[in-house]
Image 1 (cartoon, rainbow, N blue to C red):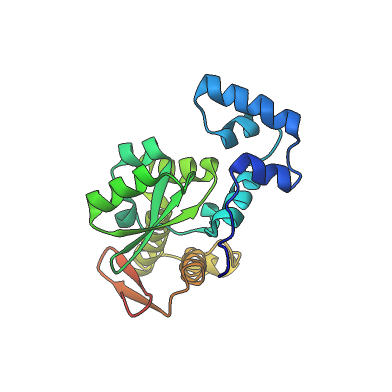
Image 2 (cartoon, rainbow, N blue to C red; image 1 turned 60 degrees about the horizontal axis):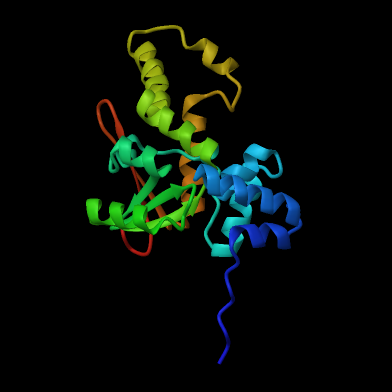
Length: 221
């Protein structure tokens, strides 16, 4: 019988990968004991490792995907599945819902209490992915402080449609850089999400002032 691979603690994994030495780790553990902060956060504050180092090691140890949220389109309706205070308390953000599965980006994907809370609260099965604290906080600020990236893109598209309906001058659209055009950015983000989630189909439903984007995964939409 093959023995399951033993999962290393974060500190041991960082040692094994040569990202910290024993002296740095012991100092960080002492600070952690006094402050109650996560070990990874302490090491980042010490300047020993970066947030990307932490999430890369976590992802490798746990077999959990790392998500770069700056390249990820999050539907505001999905974000609102979890109340803001809960999301900020546990440093997480829901990023996609397919069927009864909710993908949640987390700083600490081993936070079983948070996962259980969300599953009980939503009735959905949580699929954790790992992201940096900076990315999650920025995504939360964008989602709750503003109208989110999706809404911004939709507003840009709405302005273009308004100009067209009112007979405005659209000649300057030809001068837009391909990466600046709202529709190009929207499509790029939608496709990027689909590839990350491994979906088979993308369904786009246009409405008068909004659109709904749904993904099909394992037969669920």
